[in-house]
Structures are given as structure tokens and as C-alpha cells.
Length: 351
Length: 245
Image 1 (cartoon, one colour):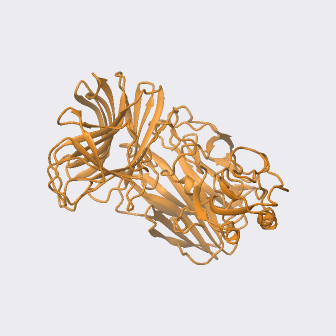
Image 2: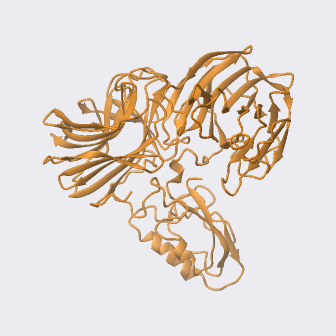
Image 3: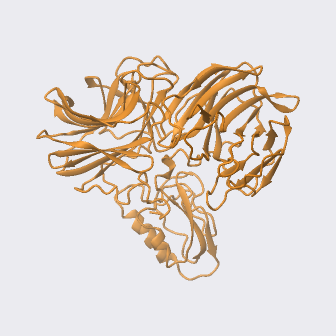
């Protein structure tokens, strides 16, 4: 997808409104689906007038793609081709129902925009349940726990035990996000098994709920990307790569990057000069290049801070999101969010 | 424009100015040049590598246009010095120039001029941008453990009119947009955050005629993890005497 796609209910009288100056016919999939009814009502002049309007623009891109020739029975322009003049094909068909129009808004320039060619492991959290590949690993029990859906409640202070991870996916108030809530005083890991390629850049957009206070306790509420090795079919917290969005420590909220080898944390780098409240850190990335791991954090502005790198000789086999809650219930048990986790098999960092 | 996205600063204008550049193609138009230190350089496409520590000399400016990981952006990697990516223009009486930028930094990096990016208008000298006569606005001037927005001028070779944002941290800055607004012979300087709030950085009045509009990119000198990169999403032009962002 090169830009945002919007679906409209249209008929032949409203299509001209949609195809205003902001619609660019050169975008692939612009007319991803036409639902073409069988009625013969003479839409030819209408469609051609649309085309003529576009063609009359000063830009060479104001042409319909003509190869493959538009299919009057359904899908249009659903693949690569050349631009040219469309001269036929609309004489006896009527547009009806819905039309998907790609609009060149500039949305593609944002880090949060879904990529044009997504990796098969990408998760956008835009469905009602997670793919079955995702599991919940409960740190306190050192075993797999359960996932319950549509149960997140940041005002609930009673959710303090068990191995269940609450997940609310794609709520109306935060579309295409997963909101997550582990029990208080526990850490959980929403992960999946992954055979890591030699080079892979893993990027996630996250958020956390904080609370107003004049001070914070260490590790109040944390969210991070963890890569873990495998031990007897389970993720092994003793050997991992960590890139935290918001390590809460000494009245600061700061990103922290480190590795854990045999249970010991080493090569720790953390941002300094960070404030306790109002942090703009939003994106977290771990870049594996061979056995070297680079940590990155990005701000809402899209600026990136390189957090350092280290080598980790242990083979990582799990990728996922770590979350932990302390005992503080303000207003209830802490909640976290993730918009996406994406994978790019590359040795370059062009974010 | 969809009502959903039209309220965003980054959204493409309904009626773009012909000078607008969205960095969504594979190369820049021939009107764009790269100026490195004190001479014209060359643009080399698709060679940006932030882990490369060897790109430290020469006059080649690396540029990746609209990479898959950051569509519709130009990612710029100077040869560990300052460069200008710009074009010659005849500026109208009133002109608002707005750009969206991004920078990389290294954790713990606190050296002066570690890497910066900004927007500058320059006079012409012999067909080249005149580094002795210009106004400029940096999104992220690095010094003394601070990343601050900075505006200043060089007039007749002399630095002046400097002002910085204060109360800023060294890490996690949310500065994102830089704008210079020409109103006759007065130039207003604005920096915008990701939240869409704007900081007026002051104004400069000068009788100089500016004929070059450039993106300034300055690479970090600490080479961690490699030569730093600068990103630009767009540079847009509005012929207006009002600031309605």
C-alpha cells in the first residue's frame, strides 16, 4: 500500500466527488475493487469524463493505467503496468456498491504506517484475537499462561494474581492497538517462536500508562522487546536481548538496552537527562546483524537514539513483548499497549 | 483530502506548490544540488548505511529516497561534515517554507555539533550558495548536553541573531518541523513538535536577497554506530503572509 485506502459507498453520481483533486490514479490499487453490477445504464460517458478530468491535469501521472486493460467485470489495475489512454470497456456497466480509493495523503511517511510489503511475521493488532502463534509466558510461574480477550480495565485494582494476560485488541478508542494488562507484581511475555535470520530489524510501537506522582519506585511499569533463547520448549529469560521503552528508575523514565547472559545483565546503556513524566519515546527497535544486536529507540517525532550494541552468542528463538507491573495500583493495575511489531530482514537501518 | 488525515501537519497539501518536494520518488530532480563544505558535490543514491564508519571524507552525499522502511522520506548521509541539499529559487515577497526532519543520535552523545539538521536560505555567489550571507534554523543543534532548536544568521561573514530553545534535554527530543517565514525582508523562524505545537524562535530583518533554499545536514563526529544520518520528509512552500499551522 502506498497510501491510505478508504472505502466509500458510491453510485455513479457521487464518484466525481471522491475523485477530486486529491486522488491520484497512478497509485497501484487505486481502484482495487469495483463492484460492477450487471445493469446496462450507460455509464461510459461518466467514467470517461472522470478519466478526462484526470488526464487534463498538468502532470503526466494523470493517466489511467492501461495495461492490463480494465476489466469491466470487476478488478481494475491490480498489478503493475504502464500508463496510457483508456479508450474502451465501460460502455454497458454501472458502478455500484463500494469502491476502494487510494488517496495520496502523505500518511505513508509516518513510522506507524503499515509497510507496503509486510513481513509474514508482522503483527498489526488490528483483529479481534491474536494469531495462534502468540503465547503468554508468565514470569512468576516460569510457564505458559493464558490470554483473555476484552478484559483490560485500568481502573481494576483487584487484578493481582494468576497467570492470565488480559488483552483487548483493536478497541474503538484505540484502533489497531493491543492493550494489555498483566496482574500486579508480575511480568508476562507476549511472544512467539521465531527462527531468526542472519539479519533482521525488529520494530515496535508501544505505549504505557503512567500515573501522576512526585516520585516513582524502581521498575514500576516496564514494557520492552525481548529476544530470548529456548530452554526445553520455553523461552529462557536467562539468555536474552532487552530493549526497554520505559525503564522506570530513580524518578526517571528512560529507555534501557542490555543483554542477559546466564542470568546476568551486562552491557547496560540507558538514556540520561530524561524526565519522569511526559516522555516522548514511542518506538523501540532491535537490529540483529549476525550475532551483533543494536538497540534503538525513537521519539514521536521520528528521531532515533542509538542505544549501543553488543554481541550475544546464544541463539535466540523467541521474540515478543515483555511487560511488568509493580505493586502500585494507580488508578488500577498498570496497562500497556502495542500498535505493531514488524520485521525487516535487512542489515541497514533506514527508519 | 480525507477528513481523517487532513488535520495533520504532515498531510500533503490539497494544492501543492510546484516547488514542493515530497521525497517520494527514486531520485531528486536535476534542480537539486549537493553542496559540501565549500564546493558543489554529488549525490549518490541508495548507499546510505548508518553502520558505515568510513564515509568520512570527500564530496559525496549519500541519499536513499523513499526506502521501504521509511516511505516518502529522503535519508541523507553526509561525509562526516556539513552539507546542503538545496536548489536555487527566486523567492517571492511572502513565502513560508516548511520542512519535516528527523535525526539520529548516539546514546550518551554530548559533543558539540554532534549532528544536526535544519533549513537555510542563502544568497548567491557565482552560482553557489553563499555561506557568508544566510539565515538558518536548526532543528537540533547539539552542544553542552543539550539538543536545542537554534536560529541565527551569517551576514557579511559575521554570525549574529542567535537564539536557542532552552529547557531542553539531550535525549528524546520531540522536535520535528522547521519553518522559515519570509515576509518581505523579515524572516520569522518556527520550530514545531510532534504534538503540532510551535515555538517562535524570533525574527531577522535583512536586505539581503536569498536565492537558495537548502536542507542542512551535519553528520555526527563520534561515528556511533557509524556516520549519522538525517531524514527529510518534505519541503513545502506556501506563498502567504500568514502562519496558520
